[in-house]
Image (cartoon, rainbow, N blue to C red):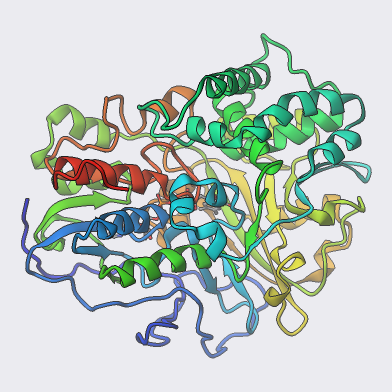
Length: 544
Ligand SMILES: Cc1cc2nc3c(=O)[nH]c(=O)nc-3n(C[C@H](O)[C@H](O)[C@H](O)COP(=O)(O)OP(=O)(O)OC[C@H]3O[C@@H](n4cnc5c(N)ncnc54)[C@H](O)[C@@H]3O)c2cc1C
């Protein structure tokens, strides 16, 4: 399939990104979303990691493959194709590479950089694709003593330590149930990953009869925690709240089987391998490693190149879209069967997150003395409180006390402290398309469990859900999951068909989180899609 290269359409708004390491251009443009806090205006730009401009325009001559979007999945697809010896060009709308895994200087405080989307990476170390590149060995993963914490009112908290026994000991009457559920799953985490993060179509490679036992355990845990017919084995307020906070990652009304699946996967990883780590220097290091591999293999990334129509693409034999399905229908609809065009154009997005990046001048003053050990804190209170908040969001209302996720990366990564101040990463769940600035709500929610927090805040930038797409067009209405989450949807996204990556247009593939296995920085959607392209377009059946 070929198409001519043509005029560049108007550029979308962007984050402040400054090409840094590959000899590219410097400090070109202003932030689309100016700081909303107390950051002084007019500060000179500080080079941020991860910005790349590898060429002004894509080649007009035919290349083997074009990837649209340089998120973790787009880069994973590009690396997979380049590893097979193909010539690959990646076209990225933004001026910075990495999509949902970028770390940028937002101008809030000198030397302080922020993870503008993802911050915590259980799926990165567990990803079979990233492991095939030895990313866990090449990155400096910093594993917190506690993977996540759930503070409760009155200065109490439930803590999921990386160490399962310590967790169980802290959960009192629920300790045995927690250990019985997650002990065997954590021991067999590779089977859990193969099941939950597979392509949802094939039997995982290397599956054994013991894998089937793990699958049954996984399914039972999901069933027990995903609906109200079979009661959960967790009875204490602490145990129930701890698991509900993780289930909340699905941003869907609770309980639900999809949310329980998310909770069981993420909790298994909390007690295995690197736990829930942050990456030294920020999430950008993950995509920087992928980019380095791609460049070493001869691939190219062109930034500042939004694709909106066929004419924006150079001729190629295969196109892979690290974007939402709607863009594929927009660009290649004339080559797709009409029913798939309709399904892609009507692809359903889910509820949303509103992001707050803060700068604080000291550690967070948690009321409970163990919460500071957690790399991720779920701020929502008891199970009932989290369920009520998520239900409100599901009904299109703002919860007064929304489930809020928070990470203080400098607690592990001391290099993130600059001149005595440090970044804090947070987002709150809100209805799709919310245009409400979440800053005050998030500060209030932290203050609830960490009295005095407000006084440590030096600067803050809140981004309403409706504006997240300004720095990544995939975040439609603030949906950070690449589409609405449901159990059926996890297996059928983007639309029910045998091959979820093929779009019906010859040589055109979807490779983003809108395809299996869904959201997270794992690169697996890109890997699975690229392997199909290699087989189907390039006749390479045995590619890695
Ligand atoms: C606030 C937030 C917090 C998150 N926290 C975590 C976390 O802690 N851990 C975790 O594992 N996951 C987290 N996630 C989810 C994770 O970031 C995503 O699931 C992941 O980045 C998806 O990767 P992707 O490559 O499919 O898409 P993306 O990362 O969204 O990348 C898509 C890329 O395509 C580009 N693009 C889009 N449209 C076009 C176009 N028309 N032309 C050219 N380029 C285009 C975008 O600019 C972007 O660079 C979070 C997401 C958000 C938003």
